[in-house]
Amino acid sequence: MKKVWRKAWLGPMAALLGVYALFAVLRPDTFARSLNLITMARQTVVVGIATAGMTMVIISGGIDLSVGSSVALTTVVIARALNAGASPFVAALAGVAVASLAGVLIGAAVGLLRITPFVVTLGAMTILRGAAKGIAHQQKIDADASGLDDLLGVLPAERSWMIFPPGVYVLAVVAVLSAALLRYTKLGRHIFAIGSNERTARLCGVEVETVKIAVYTISAALAGLAGVMEFATLTVGDPTDSIGLELDVIAAAVIGGASLLGGEGSIPGSLIGALLMTVIKTGCTHLGLANWVEEVVTGVIIVVAVALDHLRHRRAES
Image 1 (cartoon, rainbow, N blue to C red):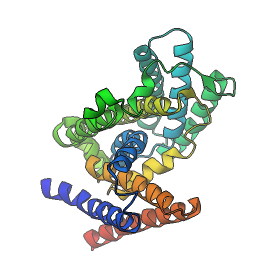
Image 2: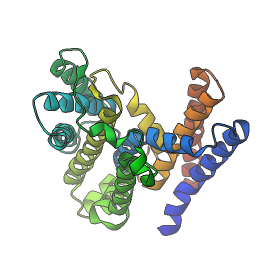
Image 3: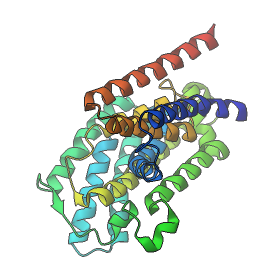
Image 4: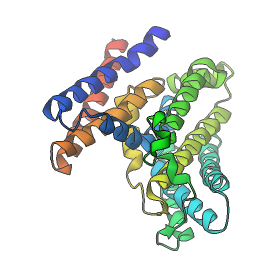
């Protein structure tokens, strides 16, 4: 198990180091600076946190297309709560709670009603986006960030010893806890079992419905936490924000070794996948390349990652 787990992220790590070295050679004057490393770490936080939850969903054999809408809804709820006089902590908690509730409902539809995850989360994507627009009256909500912006803001001189803003450390904690959940807990073993073979897992006594509800709830809660970080960046509640974020999150997980067939994946690999996407975007910007070049490169990497995954499964079956 340990050997397989290590192999899951060695490939993505080699790709990350190779791409970083390439851009560092091409733009040593700007890309290789420590300030740029800190900036890339900040830019990875939202996708990285959401990817941790998505990885669990994919390992269980599911998919969640509602992540971007959950993040947008969270920013709107936080802005509304702050304008209503709530403290920053309560406002952030409210945003995560709303996202988590949506996750419970999605998990119930997938687990109890046995509706295909793609259909359920596609519907949820539209519902949550519509709810965000309704709460915001179809416009951005300005709000006093009340210190939440410090989560991903530039560190003041007196706190320069932290190197990274608090949000980066939140991502690190989420990654460690998520990885520990998958590797060392009963729930983690059941997630892998369901993704590998749901029927066998059920025959072995795994409470499939309960596990699926838990997985989608955790994923939604992490999407809500990612929404808190997104609000920290925007400092507004934006119902149109994060459109397409779910694609970035799924891509990060797949690049990191998660199999869309279920039963395979790791948090370290997915986090590396998220970092790789950030490095590509930042590197293209430093080289002055058009946005479409960045999108093409990222798309090619995704296709290659999925192709390698299918090839690996074919070899295992032969």
